[in-house]
Image 1 (spheres, helix red, strand yellow):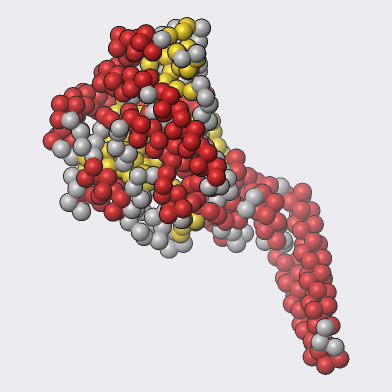
Image 2 (image 1 turned 120 degrees about the horizontal axis):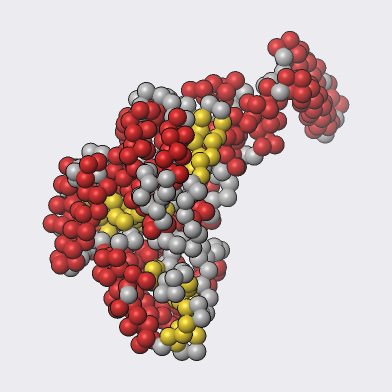
Length: 547
């Protein structure tokens, strides 16, 4: 597969609702460099790789857990050969290029796949520079927000279709929520919605991964293992109790240094505000970076009267540390401690995140420093809007580009109306506009001789007259649409396909229909366009790919 020549990039500053801190990160890194340890460049990755040391004993323990997890995820529990080689390298001293995501149903939004692609590409580029690096995908199975992961959207010929799992009880870690018998019917329905030359293998991967008895985490891991077979992606399931035991010392450090960490985070919030940004994660004077599930419910651990409280249970520092030692699996990190845990367990050279994650790493730097853990280079993941041929034809029909959809529904509708006139009327309107311009241009010379200030009045009159013609064209187009409804249908198709809900396609659409249509070569295309930190013109921009 090759992308058409129309493929191009859009700067993030031109995409609505992009966080100011992220825009500054990709456009003007020196402005925010004090909030990060390394720049998002090849030099930054290489410097972080040199600093990414890990105790050999811990490294081997982590590698063995990962070997067992990835074998469980693989088809027939036969570890993928490329993943096995990368685990050997990780055990032997390689650094990690890490990304991760919540374990959304059927892989969740497409940017999940784009994150994995970004990590694989970054690891390959590092290896070509002589740095032994392997890609690792962190499955965020300790997340408790079931509503964010229990559904997905497929783009079909009939529009967007939402699939939602009825399984699960809100308030539990999603990696522990087990699918019931209902998941089989949901998978069958979703698989029937897949079309294209590669629908059968994608459907098979869905059926093999999402089965009764699997969890959101295990099913997600099995699906990624199948989609990325042969590409060496190492999957890490965060909810594993063994990782909690290995992380217990860092949990305890977060308790003992809670005041220091809290003060550092409050200070960082002020620094960000003074620099013209806002904190991605709110930090209060009672905040710690831990959650407790000792009561059976996930509850934040808060500072109180020199001690701590979780729910209705109070702890002294000694009691809380003892509880962590005895039941490390009952504790989980907050959004600002999670990356520190990640890079305590892994020799991370680069962390690849989305806009929000890149932004909150500006706060997390304070936690890395307080906990004595090396912070990796932070890189933005590759972002894509995929335009297939039927949608490309609609864009051409109305003379649209992606920027027209990002400009909002009013702009989009107005431009579509201008291009939707019946052929005869369209020719007449074009002729009228040309006649107005020619007529008024003929007045320029005599008016200029009489009084040069009249020229601007002439141009103002021209703009008003052409505006009235545009208004009339819009009314004609709306009348035509009222009669046929074509414009409404085409507008809905374009929005659902490219900017569903007013946001980027990648934040809503699942990638599985694209993989069903285009197969492994689609991943190859993404890999070829997913350069990170290499200084290329599109390295830190959103990519629009015509396929």
